[in-house]
Image 1 (cartoon, rainbow, N blue to C red):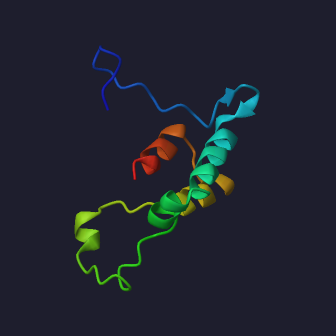
Image 2: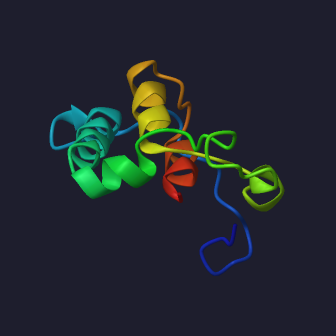
Amino acid sequence: RMGHGNGVVPPPTPQFPMLDGLPVGIQCLRIVNLLLELPNAAAVFGKPVDTVKYDLPTYFDVVKKPMDLGTVSKKLTQGKYQYIEDFESDMHL
């Protein structure tokens, strides 16, 4: 990651900060769950790709870090994200 023009990478923001009186993690969960309510988004990004069902033997050769909205929602609910940057990384589906 690039820094703020000085070449120094700032440390990750610990935990989720507050925004408008709510933890950002709660707000992120709301957004992810709203996306899961959209039929097209849920159909494509709602759960992990079933590589057997769709006969995709090289899927993991191409997709190095598989992620889906269902898993992101579960990780938010379980408090698995230590830093907001971890959530951001997972959201780059």
